[in-house]
Structures are given as C-alpha cells and as structure tokens.
Length: 286
Ligand code: NDP
Image (cartoon, rainbow, N blue to C red; front, side, top):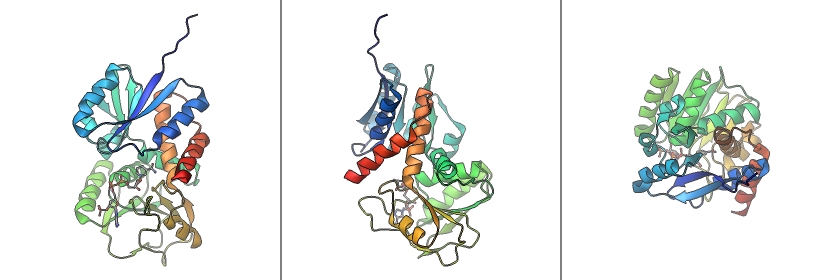
C-alpha cells in the first residue's frame, strides 16, 4: 500500500502571536496521540484575515485558533457560528465540517470543564462573582449562565464596558446577571460560592499585582479561580489559599479549552496531563 506522507494542519492566527504558547500544548498532544498533524503559529495582520480564512479553505486545514485581534472579526468570514459563541460574540476556535467552517468558543467551556473535573464543583445553583468584563469574562459569564448558575455579579473598573456587557448577556442568556462598578477593594459577600478573576491583573510579567479583594465577609467554602494562566500560581491564588479558600488556576482553563478544541478537530480525547506538563515547562522557562 502507498504510504501517506501528508500532514493535517491547524493554525493559531493572531497579531501579535509569537509569544502564544498554545502550539507547544497542542503539538505535545498530537505527538502523544501519534497523529501526523501540525499546529502552526502564524502572524496574520487584521487586514489579511479574510485572505487567511480563504487559505484555511484552500489548504483543506482542519481548523484554527483565533487570538487578538481576530476573535470578533473572523465571524463574518465563517459559514456558521455555534450558539454559545454567538452569544459570547467571539470565536476562538474554528473547526471544519465537510467544506464548511464553523466558529466555536471554547474558553468558557474550558473554564467549566476545569471547575467540574479539577475543582470538583458543579456550577448549577451556585452564586458567582466575576472580576473583569473583557473577552475572557464574556466567555466565562455566558457559560456559567448557560450552566444554570443562579446569580452572577460582574465587577469591572470601567462602567462603560461592564454595564452594556451585563445587559447584553442577561438578555441573551436570560440569567440573573448584574453589574457592580469596582471601587477600591471588592468586598465579597457571604453566600458567594465562586470568585473568578477574569482580568489581566497578575499576568506575567506583572506577577506581583493582584486584584484588590476584601475577603473579610466571604463564606469559608468559596472557590477562588484565576483565568490568568501564567504564572499558574498567581498572587491572588496564593493569598486566597492562605485565607483557607480552595483555588483553581488558569492553566486548568487554558488546557481544557485546548482539549475541547483538539477533540473538535481530531475526534480524539486529548491527553490533558501531557498538555498541562508542556505548558508548565514553557511557563517555568519564562
Ligand atoms: P481584555 O483586555 O479583554 O480585558 C481585560 C479586563 O481586565 C478588563 O475587564 C479590564 O478592565 C480589566 N483590568 C485590566 N487591568 C486592570 C486593573 N489594573 N484594574 C482593574 N481592572 C483591570 O482581556 P481578556 O479578557 O482577553 O483576558 C483577561 C485575562 O484572562 C488575561 O489574563 C488572559 O491571559 C486570561 N485568559 C485566560 C484564558 C485561559 O484559557 N486561561 C483564555 C483567555 C484569556 P477595564 O474594562 O476597566 O479596562
């Protein structure tokens, strides 16, 4: 039988994108699964996005990840958008179904999977506070709402960004989501089960920064989760742990969102521990 030397291709498109470590995680997974697949990290300026998507079609690529500045702009170039990605209003993963390109958003789904598998928490019926109102927050809030969280409070520094986001997501998901402006240390009320940092505060290289939080009224059983993946142990999580709270790091979300994407592309279960190990090594080298 003739041998097949051709590889399947997936790419991460962004600008800037050179320091994005997703390729290390996904290539480690391809190798562990014995797949002849390649994951390419490609700088694509905003003006070239349409051509890049045409390229995905022309090359028969299996899919892509999108990062800054393409997560919203890519939508008009795709054939279909998954319902939750449409609610979030952004696509971080494209998968191919026959000749059609479908836009998905795996960020919030990855967060939920981490909650369930790594923190052993079922979000339905819980009360959550999400700090931040950027892209990560939109994805997390949407998926928490769809998962049946009973109340979500979004806390953000800029009211102009936070208030309209909350109004939009409350309308789309029909969930109880409300906004609070962030002034000084945010006092977490008793009864909050889950506190999520979805801001970029604490992200490498600014590792000594942490969101100002007043823990004095918090319930002892609260879980504190950080979307910041690098460093995995943020100052927020260290402090939360020292107050006796359970914690969930941003590496969990990053790996699970990648694992969900990898399954969409390959149909195979992702080797999550291999992927986590590959990322830990990259972050430790930084
Ligand atoms: P955005 O730039 O879209 O949003 C940033 C948010 O952080 C805004 O709400 C902004 O508030 C807030 N913020 C930033 N600095 C401050 C500050 N000094 N004080 C108060 N608020 C602040 O970023 P993303 O949503 O894309 O990313 C947020 C974080 O999530 C990043 O650390 C990113 O690495 C992480 N992330 C993790 C993923 C994972 O898989 N683990 C996936 C995607 C993102 P304001 O509106 O007032 O400016």
